[in-house]
Length: 338
Image (cartoon, rainbow, N blue to C red; front, side):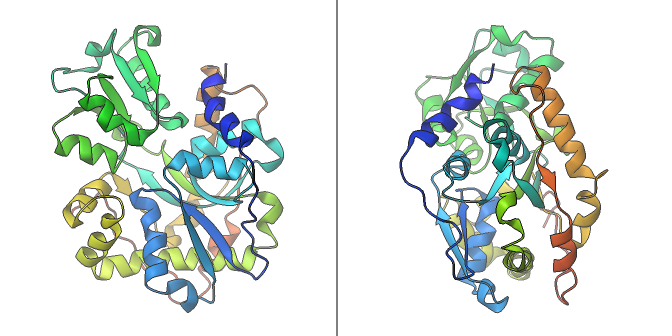
């Protein structure tokens, strides 16, 4: 059954109003969530990087990552930063708008965590407990993987679906015993001593990817602007690497983190520069492998139906972006000490 995947999407589709993300003047509109990965687009806007690359970019802040997905489903946006799991969900709901993926924004290498109250010491202790999961498939998949490795029947765990932003308060009030969290919410939980990490995405390398997804019907029309956006993304990371503390302070402020907190929030993320991405976007590359794995796993669990199309991957925009001098500065992996 796909009921749990559909609930937030159906509610979103029922909302009225459609806003064109393509403004008609060559500008791009990009929704962003309150997460470290998306803050680089905000940093680019602050530093005037879109204008320096002959791009008009308007950001549309959203209260959460699932609201970004919902905006795509409502056709308010056709360009979105989402997980590959959410891209597959979109394909299962709107096959005609199954997105094309043009860039890997980040790879989770510990950022996504299964966290539990301090007196719960292992995954085995989750039997009979209430575990909060978000509306995205990412959190539920991490939880199911942890349970399967420990030989625990998922029916022995009580799942509670809620927005990730609500999880810290639910843990504090004792409404749930554990939760699957990502920054900045995992940082808040750790800082307040509300929970400890039982498992994280390091156990599943390459399986949790965030990507830049495009409605295929808009791809060719907006291609020049999208190529410029990739260069802007690279330039924002280069700017942050040049002045890391100042950049972390500014990017973290909007999501309730100081410079140190933002650095910790990024500790489990890998950013791959444009020069590293062509092999990742090849038919036999990391992204294709990820999509095949996610689709196979979700089908076996009954989360998506057989025959659901998979997102296409287009490496040509990254390759074009790399043709411009200055598009290849290396990014420092956030998982490495800085």
